[in-house]
Image (cartoon, rainbow, N blue to C red):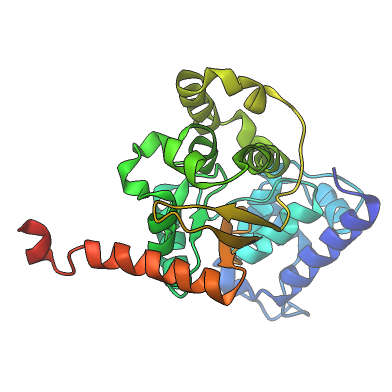
Length: 290
């Protein structure tokens, strides 16, 4: 829940946006009697479907808005995606996600894919709020295997960590990292834990690796912290990779994981592994058809 300080910050944020809007921005006609250029409180209250007194108290930080009411106020104030996220955070709600629908997922993947491809010798992947894989680079496929080969409903980082035999064979001491992935999902998922996609994923895990059910049945949480891991792909050459992560600005609920080679030798080996994957993939549609 939001704190009194956050409530006051939310009120100030809403008031500032109200005062910046012109009547024409929301389909209203300005009159000669209007003394201020911004919207009046009663106009925002009417557009939001709430009472004037209640909206006044909201701007004063004296009441708590439900998610639905705050969304209505945000629409009335024409807040952009960043503004909505900020308002939701101040109100104590799990912020809305840009990748909540298929169009949002596709747009996010298209925006981040060039970033993933800019790391030719560092495996990288883009995850949504459920840890489903939205995008990956050639190095990721070279090291862990092509995600395209995994059925869509199982194309998820938690499933890969727990059930994918190739990943488990390549990653030395895989269990601590795999368990941490499950803990981090619980820490950041919020309401997504109750979504049907989470239930579907846990169902697949129960089918495929029931012996690990205590991983997703546990309630412990933890951050997915930076660390160095050792991998040994099919070439038989060990490499050390530094794991880091960051959130795309367009959707803070999404996550990019990056495995960076720790030394020049590791980088050379990873580049050779990725280059072999590039040579193995036909470069034109005609070659693929042939």
